[in-house]
Image (cartoon, rainbow, N blue to C red; front, side, top):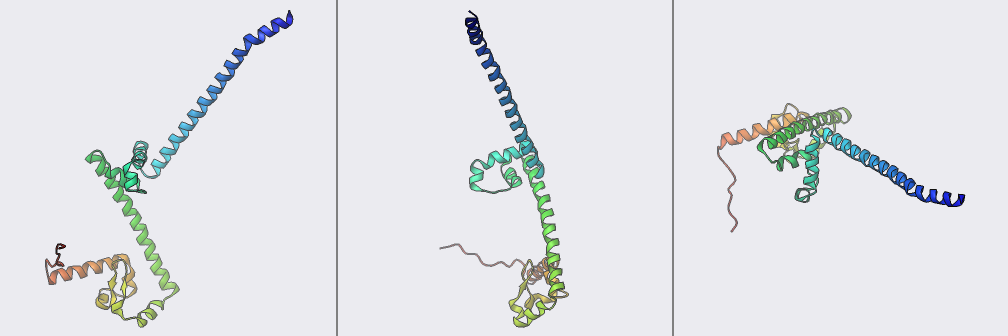
Length: 195
């Protein structure tokens, strides 16, 4: 009889034990799912913050890149993507201004680095430029960001090294273009339609 009661008790308690176990597993599963969602949200907010975007904007960027925009322009940065695909003029302006600020900062860093490269050349190899210039005619040497020709336009620089400074080089190029325009205003290369 005792065996019968034990067996009956085991039969009755078994579903309760399974239910408790299943309930405990479900609670753990829900907790893990919640933790994964929280982690994904934190990751999204971190990535958005690194790019100066809201989590919603960054999530929209990710969605856009999974569609036609990602196929047409793979690797397009978030600000350009969001600006191109902006749904309102105000959003387009916001992303355009943010993009310009980032480009300005990036360009400034690159110009600063270029100046350091120029200074390093002068410190480490001070005679290299003169040796190169003696071996090649000046009219065959274009230098700097605007590729100003030293033979024709070297007089725009205080020294040959100055021609490598980005600002100085661009300023010389602007002066050259202005001089050309002044000599012959409105001149353009003739353009003909293909026949």
